[in-house]
Length: 418
Picture (tube, one colour):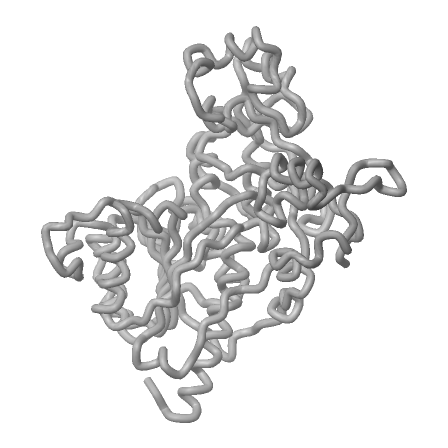
């Protein structure tokens, strides 16, 4: 059900603008909040915002139709750089059958094995794997290869030029398996990495190995039932013998933005409040200072003497440094999770209690189910969760990939393509 009223924080997230921008619009009369009839809070009525294109995408979404997407048959998946399983779990929910997962980190591999004993998890460097036994057995090859700087000694930026990079290994796996579709996810920064040369090299190689790349897109996780302001770049490639017959459509957004409250309290996402779990703690003085930060605030919301004590030399430097001494807010999505919630530069403090988020809270913000356990010491658990693709985002992309493969399957039935 679409709500009638929206908070300033919610509208800022939905429109992709800052709350400061909304305050300017309020001051100049462009978009003026009204008082909620029940609690007198300043809010926006649905009628005030539904003319924005971004809002229309939410209100007129096909999410509830897409959620019923089912594969026409079992589609086989190989995933590389699998991490703790966020992408793989989303793909499983979408209906994919996992043939193989490759990951180098031992704790992440143990996480995968503990949660899915039936998955074939290969713990090794990708460069030591031979994928030829899976030739023509794979419908989808996926993975989030790390974005390394490439050497541009070669002029064509082709397959041979990228030897020694992990993307080269990803491309080699594609050549050896010949999947119908490939999907890679990465950080938004890949778009401009090395002034765009890295993406140019990747695009060139994908073409060279026989795949047509769909225009890359940055997906904001908070639009896909994920209570987090995380952005990931997705690359989808369709094998050239199939690409001219089918079209890939990006997933529709959910009908509203999920907040931290949705993550940690009983509601749409979870049937119970977040279970208790291990978590890091703050040193005594740090906790005393952070106790003065209001919900949704950061270091600039502290008294000046505490700002100077906490920030030290950084107090005099430029830039907002908005992640420092940051306390999350119940009515907003979480900031992007990092690998360490108590790290000074990227603070992720609980909205009410003065402590870092726990492991289970971290996992919920990434939309892992509560029964998905994480292996290794607590620092390794935070790292695995912080590096993961949010499960619900992966699930949404997975449904779009299933729809694509269903279209390819119909082609096979009609023309006997292999």
